[in-house]
Image (cartoon, rainbow, N blue to C red; front, top):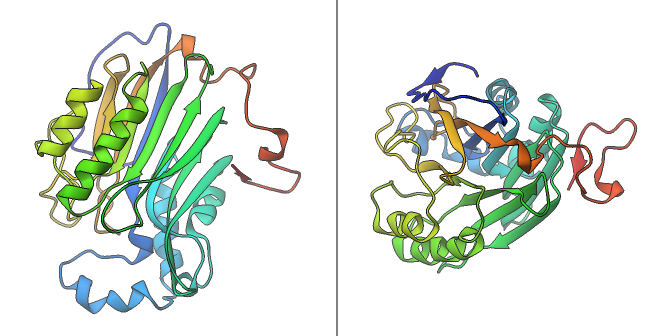
Length: 289
């Protein structure tokens, strides 16, 4: 992993388990906010193209390239402000991810098109997107199953609302999606800290655990708030969890490495997968799923 910061390793035997590296990153559409005053002086980048945005994405690609599954929030799916470049697709191609699934969350005509994205080197056996409840629309979740369909690893990537009332509704919705499953990872920009009542309620209902109590990820240049999270089932052992020292967005990327039981069959080619049309074609680098 590149430049790990704030790591919390644990020691364990990796017998009968496989290592899996996951990362969650709110990339802020490549705006590059690294000081508070940039919210004002660089606000034009949220609606207009910027020639340096490609350099920012190249820098992000270097960070995410070492991971197996990556969840992106606030990736533009191709609009005026990015020169009509789909940022998630570009990052998947730069990093040789095989599978990409994208969920449009907010569209502002052709000016800005915000999305969530899941990039993976492992083919999922099931995928579904959800519109999350809340007062203001535009928050979503991507749910993916990996490995044995009868006993899969479930990865749920989310981006939650700013308001507590909406977040409470959204986390209650999420708890109903995952609470009966033994192997779950929930990751994303939750816009609340680990001690918040709504997040404590999710942990209580689902049994999910935060590997480390507090790893500040926001603001990236002087992180004080732990609002990006990777939560895991107790049955999944965490090797380490870290905020990466990479301040180009207003959030730091959050990474974890976990041990996945062999019984899940994460890397087993015999597992049923998505239809053949969801595999890369000759000359195609990324399969849209």
